[in-house]
Amino acid sequence: MPFYQMLCIAAHYPEYRHIKDLVRLCAKHVMEPGGVVRSIDYYGTRTLPQRMHRHAQYFTTGDYWTMHFDTNPATLRELNRMMRQDPRVIRWTMLKLGDKVDQITGPKAKTISID
Picture 1: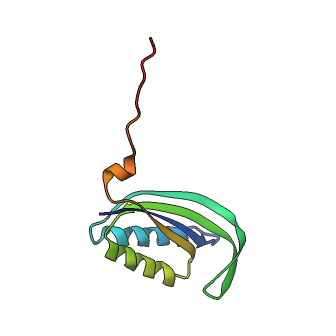
Picture 2 (picture 1 turned 60 degrees about the horizontal axis):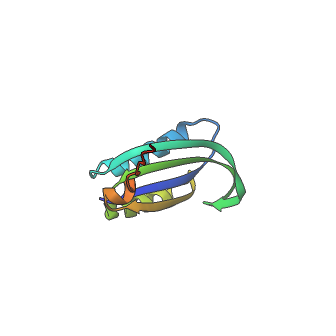
């Protein structure tokens, strides 16, 4: 399964129940067909670099979060469709980080002995 990273900017609400439900929904959507969620990181509420328009609303602040996961391409398409329709989502992007473990981890560091 390919390894992906999703960066999402969600609409900011005073209570964090909305962001928690969105993250849980995305993680469950990846895990139910057999995918693996490796990490979820929350970067906090930030002012957007410019006013953004989505779902007939304008937003000036948003909650930034990322999710690293392994899944098949069909589940990725469904996740994209789900993000497009969710009114809590302002922007998102999916990055394919690699297909194999070698592409993700990088080369081993070489050590040099100093005598």
